Image 1 (cartoon, one colour):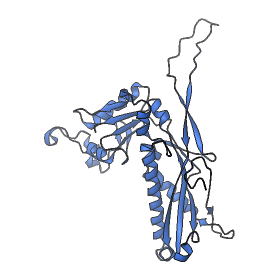
Image 2 (cartoon, rainbow, N blue to C red):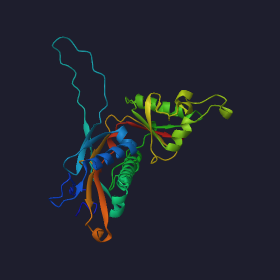
Image 3 (cartoon, rainbow, N blue to C red):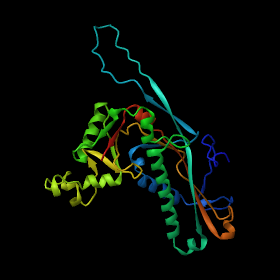
Image 4 (cartoon, rainbow, N blue to C red):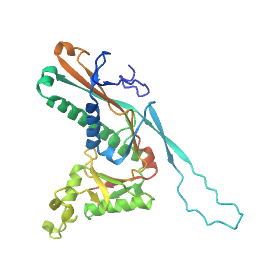
Length: 310
């Protein structure tokens, strides 16, 4: 009950019984239903394509170690038999608490019978979209209090140094992003992703040079409208769109060490009996998952460059 009330320290795991038999009286959900939702969440939330996703089979939190000692070059070996250079380094620790996110969707049994599967597909789509929205919002803007610590709140929480920001001047947006990638590499990091608000993404993709595009496209036409697909990379780095980023703000990220923690992926309970569903002749689909994320290690180690003024 504590987990249902939002207590992140409580462990309450409720899983659907997968299969086709109701001999035990438990709810039944097809395997395809669960896997389809998981696949759609991975498609709709850009962060699952950027960070690695790890499953936590037990526990309510994950300790995430990260390096706080900078790298230094190794020294040339001394004379034969001499002592070798000995270097120590220090690890710090952040905690990614697993928070339960959930949603229930009710569907009339008559509609389920008569729609030839269409109603159930709508349920899958809505649950997937809802989970993707929640994941994206927390990973981007989570406060860290009663929810995951997102990237944007983590930056001012841990100093928000000026060197971790690149601001647009009078140059094209792509040039500003290039400078941000250079700032990352100056800290020994190489970007694996650029994330932009959709408005900034499309203004970047359609940006022209000079009055009335007299100087041509800021990006090569082969990667613009004539290609029939949106700009996939900038300077060789994959670009993503995230509506949870403020308009005008982008991120260049080295996501090598970034991890999203989930608790046994999504779980589905299906019931025609709970509450007053029997009286109302509806079926309830309840989806749950545990989600853990903390941006502290990435921010503290300089793996994120904020891009402003886009």
